[in-house]
Amino acid sequence: MKHLAMAVVVKQGKVLVQKRYRADKGMILEFPGGKVQLGETGTDAAIRELKEETGLSGLAHTATYTKVNEMGGRIYFVIFRAKTEVEPSLADASRLQEFSWLSPDSIPHDDFYAADREFIKQYLPQYTLTPA
Image (tube, rainbow, N blue to C red; front, side, top):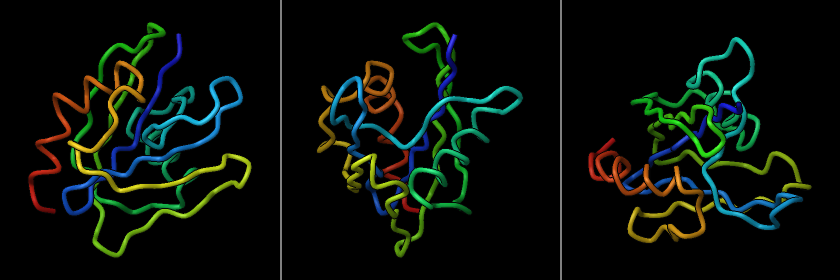
């Protein structure tokens, strides 16, 4: 059972999305995130993964949503608010990362995993419509 944590960073009505390379899938779109380590909360895992993948830290934590993921574990969507000047940086050139700030209606839903699509449709709009 694999538990995952996604960092959902919202800034000025848009959300941070990364395009990156995965050896088993090629280029994919996703929120920054990864595996929850033993003894780690979903929120702590999202904070750690966000820093590892984007260099971002110290953002305001707004909420955490959780549900069962496609592998039978938990998936945590951890929402953070970023100030206007906040920008991610490339953490590892081998990941071939590209970052974008997208409005919810411009996110290519079909490029995301099913659990992500459900979160994007059901919960993300309330955070992107509310000013920081």
